Length: 152
Picture 1 (cartoon, rainbow, N blue to C red):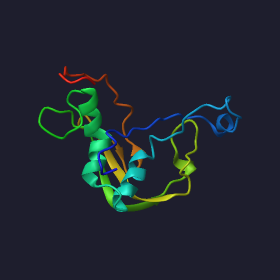
Picture 2 (picture 1 turned 180 degrees about the vertical axis):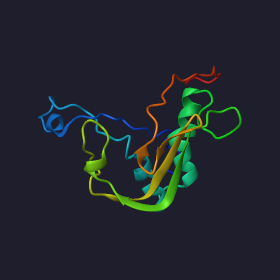
Picture 3 (picture 1 turned 180 degrees about the horizontal axis):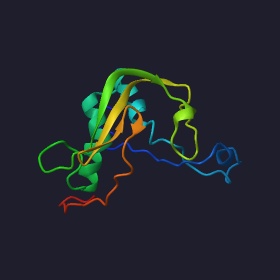
């Protein structure tokens, strides 16, 4: 991951139930739940030395803003939205189906212990998650894009 072959990592959050996923192809839907586990899975790679923390930040935020021309996102600097996640790089925790917030109620990472966990998420300067608990409702808003000279 540190070689620069990958520009962006995101989550295909496809919250299909186990019953839906247990069907035989082609009747089973594609994808898997992943929004809630993306950061800790990647931070576990940081802790194992498979990527740097700077590369994690680029893959999960700065890269997408750069590639897609998203205005005021991807960096912590004057004039940008205050969107960021505070992480505890040494926190260890087991991923469990019981706390998956998605309607599907399961994760393919159930039972896996990872090192490095988000402890707070700030969206446009407002804390929306602290210590694994949502403290504000959804703060989603439309994105703005900048015009670039390079093709996207």
